Image (cartoon, rainbow, N blue to C red; front, side, top):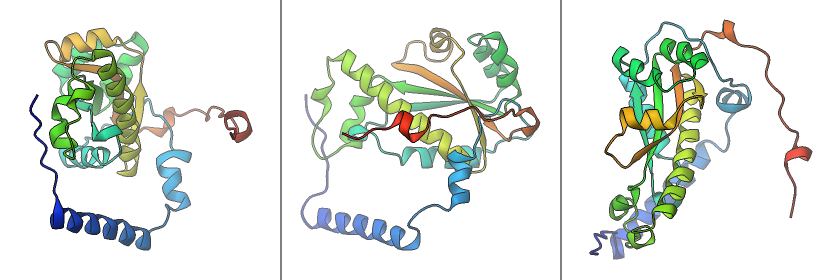
Length: 225
């Protein structure tokens, strides 16, 4: 297998490394941490939503959402996640075939439902994504390793996706009450892509909210070793 490694070397590499270090240092100088309100917006005060305003989500926001999501770390920069934004009536009808009955209305009312998927053949793009050396032999002919890596890192990217959406002012409602097999048949037949979970996107109707459910305390969930 011929590698297509094209990583910078020599003076160009040193220049790029210095620029990357300066960028991070400049960011830290401008902002050392999010404000309490910022943390509330993306996690602590955020909620999963099940009802939606009749208000569209623009293509510009979806593009920004992907660009922010893509900046999140994955192992070896594998970036296996793929996102299908279901917005059309026809697309929603296809997606509805996979849903449990109680989730159909939630999905149909949302301006956008994202299928968070991953590509099992992500490793073929590693010469572009990880140009330092050819890492394709780590995955070629190893379907179980590919599946584990794609699912783990694709799930990470799905979490980044939801946090990024909230940071952009969108509301989210993730769903797992559906058939992955039906989604894969409807949207990914004949491809190396597999669905992971669904996420409704839009601007929430807060009147449908109920009280926040409990969370474990630090003492219950954390330990030291």
